[in-house]
Length: 387
Image (spheres, rainbow, N blue to C red):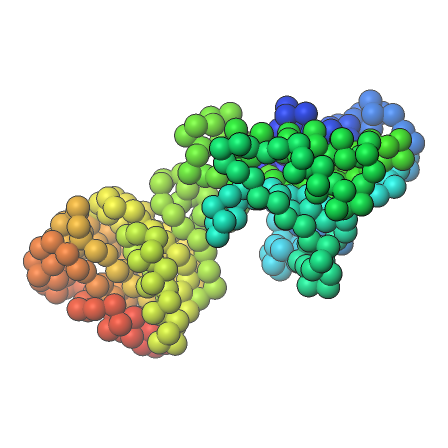
């Protein structure tokens, strides 16, 4: 789950990370009042969207007067911001962050994430802040610095100091970096984050180090432990179908193909998509209905798949382990009837009572084709989608 910038900064502040003063607003009047409260003479008006590249897309603007604040906020609020990360459809702007203007003497990059190959939380730092880290890595890989944190000992001050000196910081700046990295690490661990990124981490003209921008991604699997942060989700920034799937307990990701896929198990879903592509097809979605593939869940899954106009055929690939194949077949038949499905459906079942399940599908009198293995099922779905 992604957080907005203002939410990320509020969270980081709780753990001692310095950020510029700022206020979240949702109207022109609130924007002007927030600017007055902050004082001048310079403010930054920042669109709050779940996408990078806001500045280049016109979503971050300097305002040198209250009139500028009013004009910029009026132009941004209610608009759709298109960045290199959003695609052509863009994302809606419903909120802004009115922030103090800060004179900057240096920009750094700092992030914290999980390196699965090392089985460690790692920090990535660079003296090249304010730029796309991918671009820095491509052009100046020697400027990308990494430290791994021992999960037992936790982050150590000497690690922060070593990183700071490698980034070319002075003694006072390094001491500030120790506090900021400790705060980021504590945020990461205590809030079950998967990413904390500060770009840029700045040094102001008064020598203070602070997070000028902040991005936090929380692990959805840990939301049951954090009811407070679960409330920070902004569904307007998510694909509508993905949000609906989240609300009903399905794992759904929209894609650009025309073969709707419904599978139980994330690994099996990935394999199903790969086999579709291997035989010339393009999946329209990733959809994992989980272990309890009941009639109700199957019906909801079909509705999600059909919400995309691109879908021309549906491939169902389910392994009946805990749930028997005949019950799954019954659920599929009920779901097809309920949603009034007219598209071709290819079903591959394996597991307990598989023969009974296939017989039920064959006798249903519906446009449901069955396959013995995944390869055959994928070929059938690709051919049906091409008609």
